[in-house]
Image 1: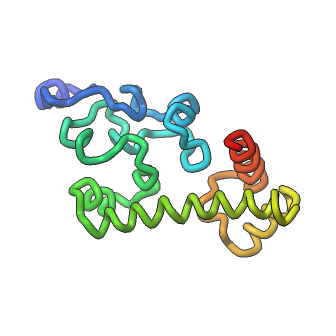
Image 2: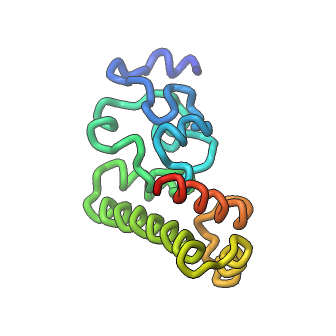
Length: 151
């Protein structure tokens, strides 16, 4: 905490419910919020790494909001945090598309009997890996494991 933070600290700030005040989201936080297929460990996008959020933030945006990630451009983040109606629609569409993407991976495996490797190769060949951070096949394996455990 810098000296400026001590002087200008908002008394209404509270511990970030996403990272639990650490400023970084870890695997435990991701599992607690059930976002294993959507987030990776790193700087907390909810509090922007500060560990604290305003009461307005808590009432306006859910801590498990899928759209609010560190990949979100700064300007887009600002618009979203101001509860812009268009931004809210974009966020909802984003979350729905992610769910469809995950469901399709599982469907390709369970109904179409494609192997994890075949699915990963398809994702890579179609340039659908924009959502996946890291190795595509590891992500596909994670999707299948988590979706099977839900059934």
